[in-house]
Length: 153
Image (cartoon, rainbow, N blue to C red; front, side):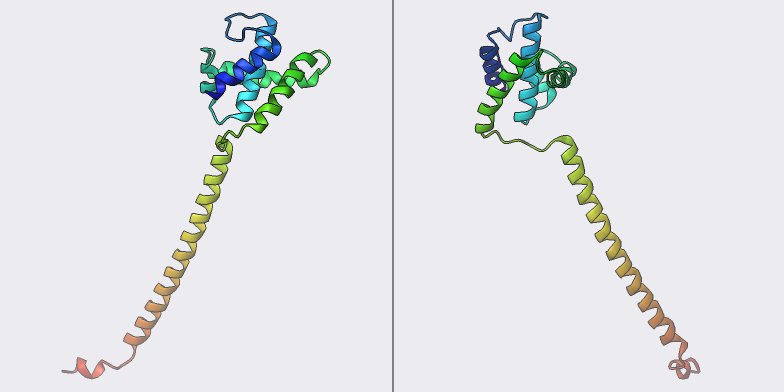
């Protein structure tokens, strides 16, 4: 699976056992890089990404956000950032079908719903106009004395 491959690539690049259950800084930073790469280059959910290390989605989200600290202080985290860039180059070459994000999906669904709503409004306005024309016709038709001669019979 691609997630395990990414984890192994990060472990080899940083020379750590990324699967080891420890809170040592080098292992934590390796997992942070994994979370960031997995989120950016795969279509998997945070929970599925975190399942590689038997963690929950909140841990993966925290790691994903923690990567921003690396960018803020590049001198302090230059080794980790170099590993990230190296692996990112490899992953860019690999064609992984990236599904749309949840926000992109919601935006697309909202646009479709708005378009359907507008079409329904237009149809309702056409129907309302046709009903108006029909009632006008019928009111005008029955107000005439065309049937007055039959009323006497």
